[in-house]
Image (cartoon, rainbow, N blue to C red; front, side, top):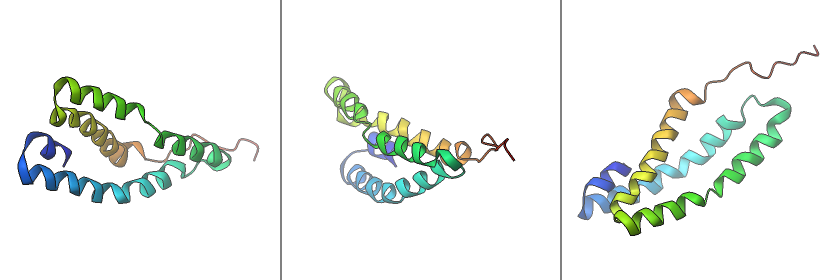
Length: 105
């Protein structure tokens, strides 16, 4: 959807940006739940790191610089790259592993 907003103009781009907000509304609770699933005793630390990641304000600054340098529409390619990472996480990155095996049992 972000690529549609980047490479189109007018009403199509406007509605694409509006729909991004609707799609993002369900993403955080889903990603948060998948991110802390199976952490065991590290759940508190994992949830804290995810909450701190919300303040990833560095991307806003980078997108502002991209908008000033290359144009507003082109700056949305940064957001599209982030969306691709979220897609990767949803399809492959959130698979559970047995990395936290309790060896005391």
